[in-house]
Length: 434
Image (cartoon, rainbow, N blue to C red; front, side):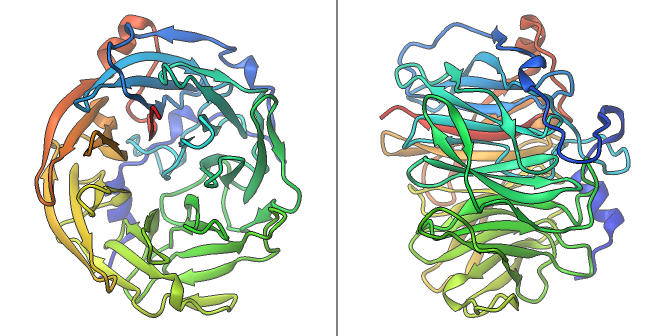
Protein backbone atom coordinates (compact mmCIF):
# COMPACT_ATOMS: atom_id res chain seq x y z
CA UNK A 1 0.00 0.00 0.00
CA UNK A 2 1.47 3.35 -1.06
CA UNK A 3 0.84 6.02 1.55
CA UNK A 4 1.99 9.62 1.22
CA UNK A 5 2.82 11.85 4.16
CA UNK A 6 0.39 14.45 2.80
CA UNK A 7 -2.51 11.99 2.97
CA UNK A 8 -1.60 10.89 6.48
CA UNK A 9 -1.25 14.48 7.68
CA UNK A 10 -4.59 15.47 6.21
CA UNK A 11 -6.39 12.44 7.57
CA UNK A 12 -5.12 12.68 11.10
CA UNK A 13 -5.69 16.45 11.27
CA UNK A 14 -3.01 17.06 13.87
CA UNK A 15 -2.41 20.66 14.92
CA UNK A 16 0.40 22.88 16.04
CA UNK A 17 1.37 26.37 15.29
CA UNK A 18 -0.77 28.70 17.36
CA UNK A 19 -0.17 26.89 20.63
CA UNK A 20 3.59 26.43 20.56
CA UNK A 21 5.35 27.52 23.74
CA UNK A 22 9.10 28.02 23.27
CA UNK A 23 11.06 25.33 25.04
CA UNK A 24 14.70 25.93 25.77
CA UNK A 25 17.53 23.52 25.20
CA UNK A 26 18.02 20.81 27.77
CA UNK A 27 15.44 19.48 30.19
CA UNK A 28 13.21 22.37 31.15
CA UNK A 29 11.41 21.33 34.32
CA UNK A 30 9.12 24.09 35.49
CA UNK A 31 7.85 24.04 39.02
CA UNK A 32 4.55 23.10 37.49
CA UNK A 33 2.37 24.34 40.34
CA UNK A 34 3.08 27.79 38.96
CA UNK A 35 0.66 26.96 36.17
CA UNK A 36 -2.82 26.42 37.49
CA UNK A 37 -1.84 25.81 41.14
CA UNK A 38 -4.11 23.40 42.94
CA UNK A 39 -7.21 24.82 41.26
CA UNK A 40 -10.35 22.73 41.01
CA UNK A 41 -13.24 23.73 38.74
CA UNK A 42 -16.62 22.27 39.63
CA UNK A 43 -18.62 21.15 36.60
CA UNK A 44 -21.56 19.40 38.23
CA UNK A 45 -22.86 17.70 41.37
CA UNK A 46 -21.89 14.17 42.34
CA UNK A 47 -24.06 11.46 40.81
CA UNK A 48 -25.99 9.18 43.11
CA UNK A 49 -24.88 5.60 42.67
CA UNK A 50 -21.64 6.38 40.84
CA UNK A 51 -19.56 3.24 40.28
CA UNK A 52 -16.40 4.92 39.05
CA UNK A 53 -14.95 7.75 37.00
CA UNK A 54 -13.54 8.55 33.57
CA UNK A 55 -10.73 11.05 33.00
CA UNK A 56 -9.14 13.02 30.14
CA UNK A 57 -6.93 16.12 29.94
CA UNK A 58 -7.46 19.60 28.49
CA UNK A 59 -3.76 20.00 27.54
CA UNK A 60 -4.13 23.79 27.37
CA UNK A 61 -0.88 25.81 27.11
CA UNK A 62 -1.93 28.14 29.93
CA UNK A 63 -2.78 25.30 32.30
CA UNK A 64 -3.40 21.60 31.86
CA UNK A 65 -6.45 20.20 33.68
CA UNK A 66 -7.70 16.67 34.30
CA UNK A 67 -11.45 16.47 33.67
CA UNK A 68 -13.30 13.81 35.65
CA UNK A 69 -16.77 12.38 35.08
CA UNK A 70 -18.88 10.05 37.20
CA UNK A 71 -19.72 6.67 35.66
CA UNK A 72 -23.20 5.40 36.50
CA UNK A 73 -24.36 1.79 36.69
CA UNK A 74 -25.79 2.06 33.17
CA UNK A 75 -22.44 3.28 31.80
CA UNK A 76 -23.49 6.87 31.24
CA UNK A 77 -21.29 9.79 32.27
CA UNK A 78 -21.84 12.98 34.25
CA UNK A 79 -19.15 15.67 34.24
CA UNK A 80 -17.94 16.44 37.78
CA UNK A 81 -14.85 18.59 37.95
CA UNK A 82 -11.55 19.66 36.44
CA UNK A 83 -8.40 19.49 38.55
CA UNK A 84 -5.15 21.28 37.72
CA UNK A 85 -2.50 18.85 36.51
CA UNK A 86 0.15 21.23 37.82
CA UNK A 87 1.70 22.08 34.49
CA UNK A 88 1.08 23.27 30.95
CA UNK A 89 -0.10 21.59 27.80
CA UNK A 90 1.52 21.77 24.38
CA UNK A 91 0.52 20.91 20.83
CA UNK A 92 2.70 18.92 18.48
CA UNK A 93 3.74 20.47 15.18
CA UNK A 94 2.01 19.20 12.04
CA UNK A 95 2.29 22.18 9.77
CA UNK A 96 -0.68 24.04 11.24
CA UNK A 97 -3.36 21.46 10.43
CA UNK A 98 -5.00 22.48 13.73
CA UNK A 99 -6.89 19.28 14.42
CA UNK A 100 -7.33 16.81 17.28
CA UNK A 101 -4.73 14.50 18.85
CA UNK A 102 -2.15 17.12 19.85
CA UNK A 103 0.37 14.65 21.28
CA UNK A 104 0.28 12.00 18.50
CA UNK A 105 -0.20 9.39 21.20
CA UNK A 106 -2.23 7.08 23.43
CA UNK A 107 -1.84 6.98 27.22
CA UNK A 108 -1.49 10.68 28.09
CA UNK A 109 -3.42 9.97 31.28
CA UNK A 110 -3.50 6.58 32.99
CA UNK A 111 -4.94 4.94 36.11
CA UNK A 112 -3.53 2.19 38.31
CA UNK A 113 -6.51 0.32 39.77
CA UNK A 114 -4.13 -1.60 42.04
CA UNK A 115 -2.74 1.55 43.65
CA UNK A 116 -5.72 3.94 43.34
CA UNK A 117 -3.46 6.42 41.56
CA UNK A 118 -3.80 8.49 38.38
CA UNK A 119 -0.84 9.81 36.38
CA UNK A 120 -0.72 12.33 33.58
CA UNK A 121 1.72 14.26 31.41
CA UNK A 122 2.31 18.02 31.26
CA UNK A 123 3.86 18.26 27.77
CA UNK A 124 4.59 21.99 27.91
CA UNK A 125 6.34 21.71 31.28
CA UNK A 126 8.29 18.49 30.63
CA UNK A 127 6.76 17.04 33.80
CA UNK A 128 4.45 14.30 34.97
CA UNK A 129 2.05 14.40 37.91
CA UNK A 130 0.35 11.77 40.05
CA UNK A 131 -2.90 11.93 42.02
CA UNK A 132 -4.62 9.86 44.65
CA UNK A 133 -8.08 8.60 43.64
CA UNK A 134 -10.77 8.71 46.33
CA UNK A 135 -12.07 5.12 46.41
CA UNK A 136 -15.49 6.31 47.63
CA UNK A 137 -15.72 9.16 45.12
CA UNK A 138 -13.35 8.41 42.20
CA UNK A 139 -14.13 11.66 40.38
CA UNK A 140 -12.29 13.38 43.24
CA UNK A 141 -8.51 13.23 42.94
CA UNK A 142 -5.77 14.91 44.98
CA UNK A 143 -2.13 15.60 43.97
CA UNK A 144 0.61 13.50 45.55
CA UNK A 145 3.77 15.53 45.91
CA UNK A 146 4.88 17.95 43.21
CA UNK A 147 5.15 17.34 39.45
CA UNK A 148 8.51 15.86 38.52
CA UNK A 149 10.71 16.18 35.45
CA UNK A 150 9.83 13.51 32.90
CA UNK A 151 13.44 12.68 32.04
CA UNK A 152 13.15 14.17 28.57
CA UNK A 153 11.15 16.69 26.55
CA UNK A 154 7.51 16.71 25.43
CA UNK A 155 6.20 13.80 27.59
CA UNK A 156 3.21 12.22 25.86
CA UNK A 157 2.39 8.82 27.40
CA UNK A 158 2.62 7.04 30.76
CA UNK A 159 2.28 3.44 31.93
CA UNK A 160 1.97 1.77 35.34
CA UNK A 161 3.21 -1.72 36.12
CA UNK A 162 0.66 -4.21 37.52
CA UNK A 163 1.36 -3.38 41.15
CA UNK A 164 1.12 0.35 40.52
CA UNK A 165 4.43 0.98 42.29
CA UNK A 166 6.34 1.91 39.13
CA UNK A 167 5.42 4.46 36.47
CA UNK A 168 7.21 4.94 33.16
CA UNK A 169 6.98 8.03 30.98
CA UNK A 170 7.57 8.35 27.24
CA UNK A 171 9.13 11.57 25.96
CA UNK A 172 8.67 12.49 22.31
CA UNK A 173 10.56 15.77 21.84
CA UNK A 174 14.14 16.59 20.90
CA UNK A 175 15.23 14.68 23.99
CA UNK A 176 13.18 11.54 23.35
CA UNK A 177 13.38 8.70 25.82
CA UNK A 178 11.67 6.57 28.40
CA UNK A 179 12.18 7.21 32.09
CA UNK A 180 10.67 5.38 35.06
CA UNK A 181 9.80 6.34 38.61
CA UNK A 182 9.00 4.64 41.88
CA UNK A 183 5.55 5.59 43.13
CA UNK A 184 5.40 6.73 46.74
CA UNK A 185 1.79 7.16 47.90
CA UNK A 186 2.81 9.96 50.26
CA UNK A 187 5.56 11.81 48.44
CA UNK A 188 4.78 11.10 44.78
CA UNK A 189 7.33 10.09 42.18
CA UNK A 190 10.98 9.22 42.77
CA UNK A 191 13.30 8.63 39.76
CA UNK A 192 14.22 4.95 39.43
CA UNK A 193 17.91 4.27 38.85
CA UNK A 194 18.91 2.81 35.51
CA UNK A 195 15.68 3.60 33.69
CA UNK A 196 16.38 6.72 31.64
CA UNK A 197 16.90 5.30 28.17
CA UNK A 198 17.27 7.31 24.96
CA UNK A 199 15.51 6.53 21.69
CA UNK A 200 17.68 8.96 19.69
CA UNK A 201 15.01 9.85 17.15
CA UNK A 202 15.60 12.92 15.00
CA UNK A 203 12.90 15.08 16.59
CA UNK A 204 12.13 18.56 17.89
CA UNK A 205 10.32 20.01 20.91
CA UNK A 206 7.39 19.95 20.42
CA UNK A 207 7.51 16.94 18.14
CA UNK A 208 6.95 17.18 14.38
CA UNK A 209 4.53 14.56 13.18
CA UNK A 210 2.55 12.48 13.14
CA UNK A 211 4.99 10.43 11.06
CA UNK A 212 8.27 9.74 12.84
CA UNK A 213 6.94 10.35 16.36
CA UNK A 214 6.64 8.16 19.44
CA UNK A 215 3.17 6.76 20.07
CA UNK A 216 2.60 4.80 23.28
CA UNK A 217 4.33 3.07 26.20
CA UNK A 218 3.18 0.00 28.14
CA UNK A 219 4.41 -2.97 30.14
CA UNK A 220 4.19 -6.49 28.74
CA UNK A 221 1.59 -8.76 30.30
CA UNK A 222 4.19 -10.38 32.58
CA UNK A 223 5.76 -6.98 33.41
CA UNK A 224 9.17 -8.25 32.26
CA UNK A 225 9.41 -5.85 29.33
CA UNK A 226 8.70 -2.20 28.65
CA UNK A 227 7.49 -1.50 25.11
CA UNK A 228 7.26 1.73 23.15
CA UNK A 229 5.75 2.19 19.69
CA UNK A 230 7.32 4.53 17.14
CA UNK A 231 5.68 5.55 13.86
CA UNK A 232 7.57 5.24 10.63
CA UNK A 233 8.10 7.82 7.91
CA UNK A 234 6.58 6.16 4.81
CA UNK A 235 7.77 4.25 2.94
CA UNK A 236 9.99 3.29 5.88
CA UNK A 237 8.10 1.40 8.60
CA UNK A 238 8.07 2.24 12.28
CA UNK A 239 8.98 -0.16 15.08
CA UNK A 240 8.41 -1.27 18.64
CA UNK A 241 11.27 -0.52 21.04
CA UNK A 242 11.54 -3.23 23.71
CA UNK A 243 13.56 -2.99 26.93
CA UNK A 244 13.93 -5.83 29.42
CA UNK A 245 12.88 -4.94 32.97
CA UNK A 246 15.47 -6.27 35.42
CA UNK A 247 14.63 -7.60 38.88
CA UNK A 248 15.77 -4.35 40.50
CA UNK A 249 13.43 -2.37 38.23
CA UNK A 250 16.16 -1.01 35.97
CA UNK A 251 15.92 -1.34 32.19
CA UNK A 252 18.31 -3.01 29.78
CA UNK A 253 20.79 -0.44 28.45
CA UNK A 254 19.69 -0.90 24.85
CA UNK A 255 16.32 -1.66 23.30
CA UNK A 256 15.43 -4.26 20.70
CA UNK A 257 13.78 -2.78 17.62
CA UNK A 258 10.98 -4.90 16.12
CA UNK A 259 9.48 -3.72 12.84
CA UNK A 260 5.94 -4.77 11.86
CA UNK A 261 5.37 -7.46 9.27
CA UNK A 262 5.46 -6.47 5.60
CA UNK A 263 3.06 -3.62 4.91
CA UNK A 264 3.11 -2.14 8.41
CA UNK A 265 3.92 1.56 8.55
CA UNK A 266 2.91 3.62 11.56
CA UNK A 267 2.38 1.54 14.72
CA UNK A 268 0.43 3.71 17.13
CA UNK A 269 -1.51 2.47 20.17
CA UNK A 270 -0.71 -0.93 21.68
CA UNK A 271 -3.18 -3.25 23.39
CA UNK A 272 -2.14 -6.54 24.97
CA UNK A 273 -3.72 -9.69 23.53
CA UNK A 274 -4.56 -11.56 26.76
CA UNK A 275 -2.62 -14.76 27.37
CA UNK A 276 -0.84 -14.70 24.01
CA UNK A 277 2.42 -12.80 24.62
CA UNK A 278 1.34 -10.60 21.73
CA UNK A 279 0.27 -7.04 21.02
CA UNK A 280 -2.32 -5.53 18.71
CA UNK A 281 -1.01 -2.18 17.50
CA UNK A 282 -3.16 0.20 15.51
CA UNK A 283 -1.44 1.38 12.34
CA UNK A 284 -2.39 4.79 10.97
CA UNK A 285 -1.08 3.81 7.54
CA UNK A 286 -3.03 0.59 7.00
CA UNK A 287 -5.28 -0.60 9.86
CA UNK A 288 -3.59 -2.67 12.55
CA UNK A 289 -0.51 -4.80 13.17
CA UNK A 290 -0.17 -7.91 15.31
CA UNK A 291 3.19 -8.53 16.98
CA UNK A 292 3.84 -12.10 18.13
CA UNK A 293 6.43 -11.73 20.89
CA UNK A 294 6.74 -15.48 21.40
CA UNK A 295 8.54 -15.60 18.06
CA UNK A 296 10.66 -12.48 18.47
CA UNK A 297 14.39 -12.86 17.99
CA UNK A 298 16.94 -11.69 20.52
CA UNK A 299 18.52 -9.27 18.07
CA UNK A 300 18.99 -5.52 18.21
CA UNK A 301 16.92 -5.16 15.03
CA UNK A 302 14.37 -7.59 13.63
CA UNK A 303 11.03 -7.91 11.85
CA UNK A 304 7.96 -9.29 13.60
CA UNK A 305 7.87 -13.05 13.01
CA UNK A 306 5.83 -16.13 13.89
CA UNK A 307 2.11 -15.38 13.75
CA UNK A 308 2.67 -11.64 13.37
CA UNK A 309 0.68 -9.94 10.63
CA UNK A 310 -0.61 -6.68 9.18
CA UNK A 311 -4.35 -6.32 8.59
CA UNK A 312 -5.80 -3.62 6.34
CA UNK A 313 -9.04 -1.87 7.24
CA UNK A 314 -10.85 -0.86 4.05
CA UNK A 315 -11.46 2.87 3.85
CA UNK A 316 -9.46 3.67 6.98
CA UNK A 317 -7.69 7.01 7.20
CA UNK A 318 -5.94 7.10 10.57
CA UNK A 319 -6.66 4.17 12.89
CA UNK A 320 -4.70 5.17 15.99
CA UNK A 321 -6.32 4.12 19.32
CA UNK A 322 -7.48 0.81 20.76
CA UNK A 323 -8.94 -1.01 23.77
CA UNK A 324 -9.95 -4.59 24.61
CA UNK A 325 -13.37 -5.72 25.85
CA UNK A 326 -13.28 -8.70 28.26
CA UNK A 327 -17.04 -9.16 27.78
CA UNK A 328 -17.06 -9.51 23.99
CA UNK A 329 -13.47 -10.74 23.65
CA UNK A 330 -12.91 -8.22 20.86
CA UNK A 331 -10.79 -5.11 20.31
CA UNK A 332 -12.22 -1.68 19.49
CA UNK A 333 -10.21 0.76 17.38
CA UNK A 334 -10.92 4.43 16.66
CA UNK A 335 -10.08 6.34 13.47
CA UNK A 336 -9.80 10.13 13.73
CA UNK A 337 -10.16 10.52 9.96
CA UNK A 338 -13.38 8.54 9.48
CA UNK A 339 -14.82 9.05 13.00
CA UNK A 340 -15.56 5.33 13.14
CA UNK A 341 -15.07 2.63 15.74
CA UNK A 342 -13.84 -0.63 14.21
CA UNK A 343 -14.50 -3.84 16.12
CA UNK A 344 -11.80 -6.47 15.57
CA UNK A 345 -11.58 -10.15 16.50
CA UNK A 346 -8.23 -11.87 17.05
CA UNK A 347 -8.51 -15.66 17.10
CA UNK A 348 -6.45 -18.27 18.95
CA UNK A 349 -3.90 -18.28 16.12
CA UNK A 350 -3.53 -14.48 16.29
CA UNK A 351 -5.40 -14.01 13.04
CA UNK A 352 -7.14 -10.64 13.04
CA UNK A 353 -10.33 -9.71 11.21
CA UNK A 354 -12.80 -6.82 11.17
CA UNK A 355 -16.14 -7.68 12.80
CA UNK A 356 -18.13 -4.47 12.35
CA UNK A 357 -17.78 -0.71 12.16
CA UNK A 358 -19.75 1.97 14.00
CA UNK A 359 -20.08 5.55 12.73
CA UNK A 360 -19.96 8.22 15.45
CA UNK A 361 -20.71 11.16 13.18
CA UNK A 362 -18.78 12.90 10.42
CA UNK A 363 -15.84 15.01 11.60
CA UNK A 364 -16.30 13.98 15.23
CA UNK A 365 -12.56 13.49 15.54
CA UNK A 366 -12.65 10.22 17.48
CA UNK A 367 -9.36 9.77 19.32
CA UNK A 368 -8.56 8.16 22.71
CA UNK A 369 -10.84 5.49 24.15
CA UNK A 370 -11.17 3.14 27.11
CA UNK A 371 -13.44 0.24 28.10
CA UNK A 372 -14.86 -0.61 31.53
CA UNK A 373 -16.76 -3.60 32.90
CA UNK A 374 -19.78 -2.86 35.10
CA UNK A 375 -21.97 -5.64 36.43
CA UNK A 376 -20.96 -8.09 33.72
CA UNK A 377 -21.41 -5.57 30.90
CA UNK A 378 -18.80 -3.54 29.03
CA UNK A 379 -18.95 0.12 28.03
CA UNK A 380 -16.63 2.08 25.77
CA UNK A 381 -15.82 5.77 26.22
CA UNK A 382 -14.56 7.60 23.13
CA UNK A 383 -13.13 11.12 23.23
CA UNK A 384 -14.67 12.76 20.15
CA UNK A 385 -12.38 15.76 20.34
CA UNK A 386 -13.48 17.62 17.22
CA UNK A 387 -17.06 17.56 18.51
CA UNK A 388 -15.89 18.32 22.09
CA UNK A 389 -17.85 15.41 23.52
CA UNK A 390 -17.49 11.89 24.86
CA UNK A 391 -19.40 9.11 23.10
CA UNK A 392 -20.48 6.18 25.24
CA UNK A 393 -21.04 2.80 23.58
CA UNK A 394 -22.69 -0.20 25.19
CA UNK A 395 -20.86 -3.35 24.07
CA UNK A 396 -23.78 -5.75 24.40
CA UNK A 397 -22.22 -8.65 22.47
CA UNK A 398 -19.77 -9.21 19.60
CA UNK A 399 -20.92 -7.09 16.66
CA UNK A 400 -23.63 -5.41 18.73
CA UNK A 401 -22.21 -2.14 20.06
CA UNK A 402 -24.61 0.79 20.30
CA UNK A 403 -24.14 4.46 21.08
CA UNK A 404 -26.08 5.26 24.27
CA UNK A 405 -24.81 8.75 25.11
CA UNK A 406 -23.18 11.81 23.56
CA UNK A 407 -21.82 13.80 26.49
CA UNK A 408 -21.20 17.46 25.67
CA UNK A 409 -17.97 18.88 27.08
CA UNK A 410 -17.97 22.39 25.60
CA UNK A 411 -21.19 23.70 27.17
CA UNK A 412 -20.47 22.65 30.76
CA UNK A 413 -16.83 23.77 30.44
CA UNK A 414 -17.87 27.24 29.29
CA UNK A 415 -20.43 27.52 32.07
CA UNK A 416 -17.79 26.55 34.64
CA UNK A 417 -15.15 28.89 33.23
CA UNK A 418 -12.87 26.06 32.10
CA UNK A 419 -10.92 26.75 28.92
CA UNK A 420 -10.99 23.89 26.43
CA UNK A 421 -10.21 23.50 22.75
CA UNK A 422 -11.06 20.37 20.78
CA UNK A 423 -7.63 20.49 19.16
CA UNK A 424 -5.95 20.17 22.54
CA UNK A 425 -8.07 17.53 24.30
CA UNK A 426 -6.28 14.22 24.83
CA UNK A 427 -6.45 10.92 26.70
CA UNK A 428 -9.07 8.63 28.21
CA UNK A 429 -8.74 6.38 31.23
CA UNK A 430 -11.12 4.97 33.84
CA UNK A 431 -11.38 3.75 37.42
CA UNK A 432 -14.08 1.46 38.84
CA UNK A 433 -14.76 1.13 42.57
CA UNK A 434 -13.56 -2.09 44.13
